[in-house]
Amino acid sequence: MGKNTRLIFIIAAVSGLFILLAILLLQKNKPAGEVSNESFTVEEVSMGPVISSLQASGIIESDDEIIIRSPERSIIKKVYKNAGSLVKKGDLLIELDEKSVQKEIERMQNQLDIKHNSLEKSRLNAQNTRLSLDRNEEVKKLRILTLKSNLREQEKMLEAGTIAEERVNRTRQEVEAAETDLQSQIEKNAIRIQQMEADERGLLLQINSQEKNLKEKQAMLSKLRVTAPAEGVILAINNSEGQRIEEDAMLLRMSDMSSFKVVGWVNEKYASRVQTGNRVLVNLENEKLEGVVGEITPIIEDQMIHFNVHLADKKHQGLEINQSVSLEIISRNHDNVLRIKKFPEFEYSNRQYLYVLHDREAVKTEVIFGTIGNEWCEIVSGLSEGDQILIGTGDAESGPARFHVKKSQLN
Image (spheres, rainbow, N blue to C red):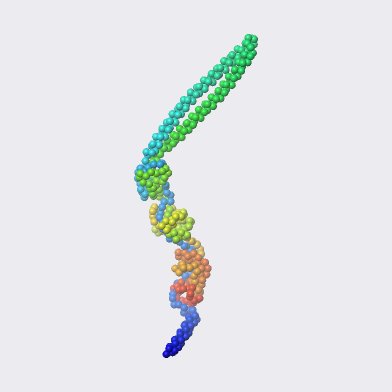
């Protein structure tokens, strides 16, 4: 019984093997028109643009911000406007404490009074010195006149023989010495006068400089009442009442609302697709505005990268501060290339096997794609303009090399 069972099993296995081989042989030799009964969509290869874009988010901000800085080291006395407030030109925004400036003005005024007093003393001393110098010169001139008068009398006496020549020569020498002394005194007096004039000019320069500084400090009192330089909106206030601030520290940022930009962000995994200069479409209600990617912030925050978008029409009437918008970042843009409509399966690989229709015969063809865009795929090789592709053939890569298509199968 056991032998008969084994014999039956062997005969059944051999019979099954022959049946399987027959089925495979029949499938291989099956007529082409009997491969499938499914319907196909026919897509034609054409020339045109292929655009690949990235979706991102953004918010409208001012493109021309006004930064107001502290004119002086002080304390914030009062804040009159908050972030988001609309202001007119001249509106009071922040008031700074004036006490420290007033004390500085008093100190500078005291120093200036001391300088004026020093100048007055210097001028009186110079006047007295000039009088003393003039007297010295006059005394020396009178002595010279006396010596010359004596010399003339002695020369007459020498002619009369009543005086020795030696005495006359000695008087001549005294005249020459007195004239030399007078010339030396005149030169010294001139130098002394120049020194006094230089001292006075120096004091005047110091006084002029301090008077200028005092006027600037006095003008600073009005600047401690910070007003809006133009009509606009307050974007941010950096300090609060009672806080001490340094000179030139930023008090607030505001916009005159005359021009705008977009600050966008996208997940960091798309960072390689966001480049400076990329074209951007800003979706504004039923309108798209053109722009380009500007500065890209190198710091990643909350897994997002941030970037600026400079708008072609940054004064567009539909733009508003803090308005949220969606962005399309054009990462690739080919204007006139061979293309075919995009289908989901095309995203899996840039190398695809597609059926190309020739006189109702579908021929399996290897196609290489370039840029996979949003709506179209760029064709690098394998197809030509006008070729018709059958979409809906299942797995073309493992399918038959070719098959016939009935007219009723085509949509």
